[in-house]
Length: 213
Image (cartoon, rainbow, N blue to C red; front, side, top):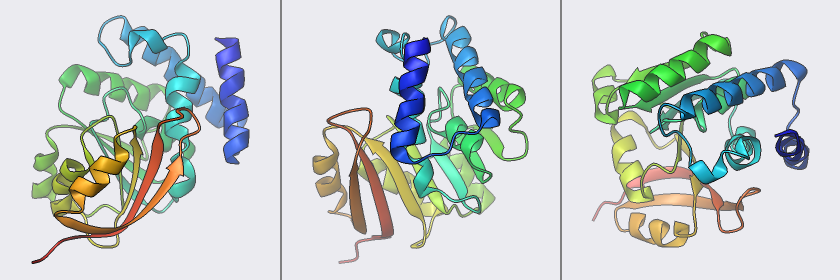
């Protein structure tokens, strides 16, 4: 675990992310809660249990440079808290974690309490479509291992506008997902290499709008 944590901190340096003692303490608490709850429910892949810092926290934290403290973030399928909880620890912005499974929401709320995130971390135990009734608009949409890009854009359409930014973690199929999404949506795309996965990408989308024919 110490080697994993050390590699994580080196990765943060590589990304140019300043890790204060307070934020690192909250990251440590998060990892402790994650591993405890993993014994009860499946939050992360069993093969990654030995490397939670580098396989999961670092993977999520690479989204942080693209999010500002005045953003209103919605994270789809927050499950194990990645990237929602990590963003809430690292930034002062409002982060809305959307998760349908009640047990996972209990986990997220324990993270919220023990990491003292009550001011900026909101857990929604619901389907994404339940947010449509609130008439809220979000400035950033995040997701990790949730759905393909086209579906993310469809889910997000009623609660976003053309100014919304999408900051997404994607795997090796990212190129096909972009092609598929382009059938129904127009967007500006910026693709960054993932620091944790040679085949992974950080996908940045702006000026997203539905294609009109």
